[in-house]
Structure formats: structure tokens, C-alpha cells
Amino acid sequence: MRFKLKKIDALIIVALIVIAAFVLLRVDAPDILKKEPAEINLVKDDANKKLIVESVSDEVKWSEIEILGDCSRSYLGKFVKEGDEITDCKGTITLRYVAGDLIGTWTFEVERKPPESLIASHLRSVSPDDEGAHFKGSLRITREWWQYTVEFDKESELPGWTATISFNHMAYGDLLGTVKPDVLVVTLHSPDGQEYGGLINKKRGLGLFIKPTLDANSPGVDVTYEDSWAQGIAPNWDVHAEDNDIDSAHEIIIDLSYFAPGSPLWLHSNRAIDKGEGVISEYIFLGCEVNGTVELDGNLYHVKGIGHHEHSWSNSLMKLFIKGWDWCHVTLDNGWNIYYSNYYLTKQITPTKTMEFNPFSSFIITTNNGVTLTLLDEVDVEIKKSDSIFLLLKMPIQLNISAETRILSQILLKTYDVRINMNLLSDNAYDKIWKIPTYVGMKIGRSTVSGKLTWNDEDGPQSVDINGIGTSWCMRH
Image 1: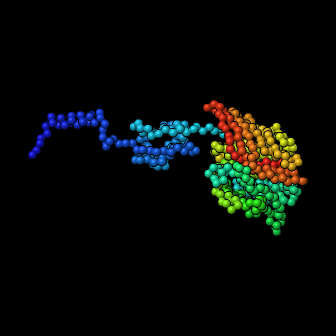
Image 2: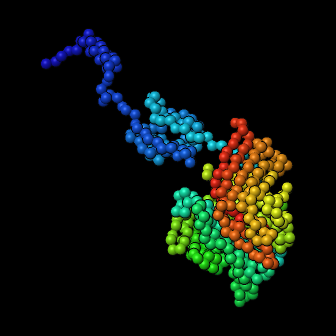
Image 3: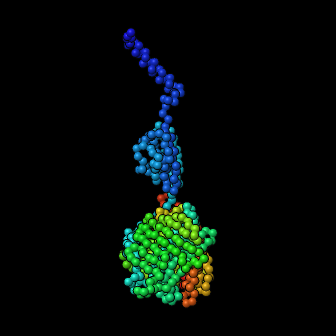
């Protein structure tokens, strides 16, 4: 049987459909008629200022999501996937579906950083030849040092410990006449006062039949001292140190790998342009990423942290002018790094004697492991407390350091009025004294730092509290 649909019947059917749709919209529609938005879970990475997609329940496009706030979407594809990253997040970041459903809101602290120094490129470049030995084949260069330090972080099996490893080719006459001018430093210091290692100086072999205790070659770092050595070319170096005769009570074996994310900085040189060709030169890599192991009395510890690598060389005349120094590399709790050094041109006979003006001082701040630097070259040092360890040798154990910028050297940075006031306390250190006739003293170890950094920028006055630990090295003669 055939049914013929009349025009009036078609109109009635259409009307019924419209009415049914209207009713469905006015009442709660069944769940099967609604598509629930995909559930997206994101985790907040404060340290790296990013949001990471941890999971997503269904297929959804990023174009369906509105991202509000100051951030970068450059790593996002078409569809939302686990591991996707929203990077460079600043302030409050909100995600919601274009349709209106909220996904979540996260707030990142806006990082305050001091302004950076503008540094000429030739001051931030070293060659493999610069890294190698300079005392060989040169009668003018009599001293050369390769120094590595590190502060181990909380993820290490030795958290809060510090280590110093240094290979030192000294000038004849620096220590006890001409008998033992080759020096090796291997020290470990803990937050609770434990101390391992120390310093040893041995004879320098001359001629073909007596091998020198310390030997070095070029290009790159290639230095050995008995069973200890350092090798590599920037930005990577490997360091192996064994205490051997340094600490008779303990067995120490240290293996560390260094990586420098940033370029070096020439601190001093008697050459204006070709710094590495000077007879007095010094450069430093700040904020090196350090990984490796420490074997202490048969116990193996895995360690990581932040350190620095310093290389310097000079002639014998420097001893006539340099009567002491203070060096310190600091890792702050907020991840920044500070390097401070000061050379004294007069004997430090009284415990708190310092120079009113010293052109051989350095104060460097880096917020990103040496990639950019803030240089403060007006440095004032007050020695608050000293140890009188032997006759006229006064070794500092507490310093107050204030620094700012000279207007002639960095006019742009001067406008920001960057200033720092820092207290440095040597809380666990190894002392080495060479007595008659040398009268040389060294203090090498762990220090704690506190203070305040201030500056002005487009957002007004800024102030950052600084706290951290460092490796320090003081010398007096």
C-alpha cells in the first residue's frame, strides 16, 4: 500500500521537529547529545618557567584553546599532546576552551634580574692555545695556574659540600726558596665542618732524566701532577684528582666533568687586544655545570653542582707587587653565580688593613651560568675578622664587600645604579703556612654568603636578597 504525503502533512512534520528541538533546548538534554570537553592536566615548572601537558583525555586542537598571559606558544603543534610545553611564562597564565570552559590558572613569579654589562667580544673569547701551557719555552712567564672549583647541590650525595682542585706551576722563590715550587690543591669541605685533602708542593724536575712533578702542554688544557690531571678544550673539561700524599688520614679520588654554558671573561692582561699573548693574563669561566663522582675512604658518592674554571699566568715581577689576594666563587640559592677577587698591593700586616682603591679587583654577577654578566668594578673591601696564624700573617675569615660601577667604564650600566653589599664568612677552611724564610699563608675552603643586591629599572627600585655557599681562597705574604 502506498501512502501519498500531502503538502499539509509535510508541514505538520516539520513543525513537530522544530517543536521537539525547542523542547530539548529548554530542558536538560541527554548526555549523549553533549560532547564533554577533553580533560587536560598541566604541571607547572617554576624553575624553567613553563607549563607541561601531563595528560589529555581526548583529541583536541590547540586552536580550540585560548591561552591568556605572557608566554610562548612556539613549541605547540596542531593537536594537544602529552609533553607539550608552554614556555617563557611570566605572571598569571590562564587556559580556557574557546567555548568557555576553564582549564586552569597558574601564576609564575616575575623574575627580577639586574641589567647586563655590554662587553666587547674580544674580552669573551679564548683559543685552545690560550688554554694551554705558557710557561714552557718562555723565560718571561714563571707562574701558571689551572683552577677548578664546585659547590655540590641538593641533588648530590654530598649536598652543600665544596671542592677545589688546582694545578699550580709556581715561580722559583715563591715557596721555600727553589726547592718545591710545584703545587697541587685537592680539598673537600662539608657544611658540618668535615675537611679532607689539602695542599702539597713538590720538587720540580729539570732535564731529560727527572720528570717535573707538574707538567703541561698545548693546545687546550693538558696538565698533570703525578696521578692527577685535567684535560679538555672549552667548553668541556675532565678533571681527575687523587690526594696521594696530601691527606695521609684519608683516601680521596675525584672525577668531575665540567661544561661551560657561557663564554669566558678576561679578567686581566697586559695586552689590550690579544689578551692570550700577554705575560700577565687571567680569564675565567663562570657557572660551569659539573657532574661526576667523589670516592672518599672507599665510599663512592655521585655529585653534581655549579663551579668555575680559572686560568692565569704571570712573570716573577708580580711577586714584588702582589702581597696577597682574596678569591671567591659563590653559587646563590636562586641559581645565580658571583665571582669576587681582590689583589693586595701592600702587605696585610694589620688584621683589617685594606686599600682604598684597587684597580686589580673584580666583582661579577651572572644570572644564567655565565651567558650574560654584570660587572661591578668599583669594589670596596672591609676585613671584619682575621686569624693571626703565624707572626705577621693575618688570614681573613670574615669580609664585607660592597661594589658598584664606575661611570667611565660602563656609562649605560651606571644609569641603573647597580649596587651590592655582601658578607662573606669562611666557615670551614684548610690552612697552609710556609714559615721562615717565605712567610706565605693560604686559606682554602668553604664560605657562606649573605647580602643584598639593588638596582633601578623601568619598573622602579629593585632589591634581591642574596644567600649561598662558595669556594674561597686567600693568600698573604
